[in-house]
Length: 178
Length: 91
Image (cartoon, rainbow over all chains, first blue to last red; front, side):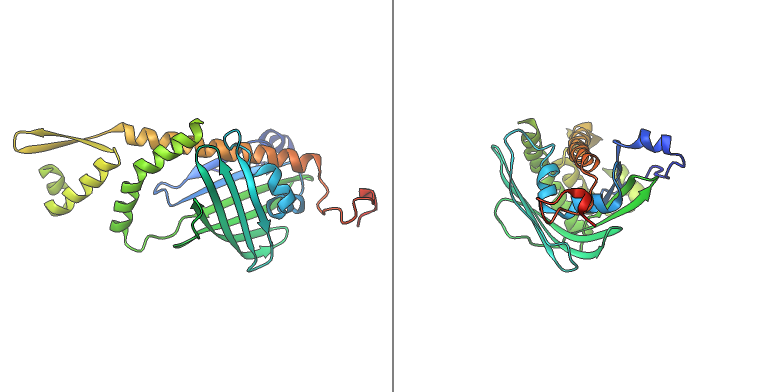
């Protein structure tokens, strides 16, 4: 992991605004995104949980012609969220989530299942935690920590991962090349 | 493979199993050399993984740029319950 210590002066913050920092753990089992946004935490919190806001920013970066077909969110503890997108020449991908903790506007926790195709979510979820810290007088430092599920049997996990890796990478390559 | 068996302390069937997995993921390549099978690291698999992570990063950069534009230009934290009411009248 690289240093994500907050800068102490606002001019540095201004410089950092707009820069996303992403660190993948050495064993690939987790990643962390850090980003400074130009609004207070309650506004950023809303952007992460309000379907009208999510529809504006979440599809960004998807291949041209992609469409967000479902965007539902009930940001209360135990509430669900469900996003689905249709990617040209690839099909449907979906994110099924359950909010495990909702502490507006400071913290948001969720279990999430990512699904390719129409299938229902199965298996253990990823564990996601977002924190929103006020920074300066109008900024928010957002940290998103995503932990992959613990493999029950490391050897089986390694076999399955390796078996799926080539096909997954090929599918991903096709997805991002279109 | 014998060097890996000696160096890892694992039994040959275990080392063989791990190497097959790594070969399927294109992380090692193998060639026959008489009675021996010689393995070497193969950067293609790692390059593919690196490329995948770069594309994954690109998606998050794009998403968060759009999110920042949204919240920076519309800093009101609460959705307007009555669109006919000017924002300055909201609590």
